[in-house]
Amino acid sequence: MSMLESILSPRSCRNCRVCCGFTREDIWEIPLIYKENRTSVEKMLGVGLVPRGKEFVFDMDFNSNGVSYCPALSENGCTLGELKPFDCAVWPFRVNALGDMRVITVSPVCETVFSLPLKTLSDFVRKDGFAEKMFTEAHMHPDIVKPYIGGYPILAVEKDI
Ligand code: SF4
Image 1 (cartoon, rainbow, N blue to C red):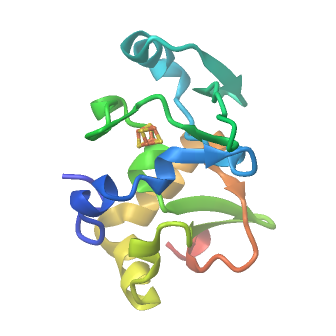
Image 2 (cartoon, protein in one colour; image 1 turned 90 degrees about the horizontal axis):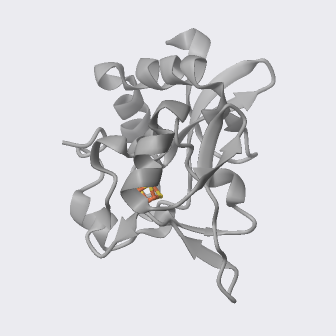
């Protein structure tokens, strides 16, 4: 069961996949493949990864419309299984840097999750250690922390957890 299954059904994801496509503007959102998984992912997909910070990302090949789909995406969704990046496992939630704080936000790009009441989302991130897991992951892999984008709802602040 995915970490988000109580608020986002696998069927919704299969019918959407917006989070697996990227434009040049959202290249910063391409999921990080941790360095310990680099070789396995390269072998599985037959593609090379390029460094980003201390981790790696797919080298995206943008089509004439400026869009690139993740090479791990298939008709049936993500093919990476256990190697699915943490960024993807928790998307549309993100750890963002806001001043000297780390906060958990939700991206409006995922219409299914974003349409839920903020109280539901706030309760979700506080339930079952989800927020702690995200902040712990951010300490182990600080490259997953992205700058805060103004207007994104803040669901949790690290010091409050
Ligand atoms: S790794 Fe999987 S879930 Fe993440 S963007 Fe690629 S296909 Fe989508």
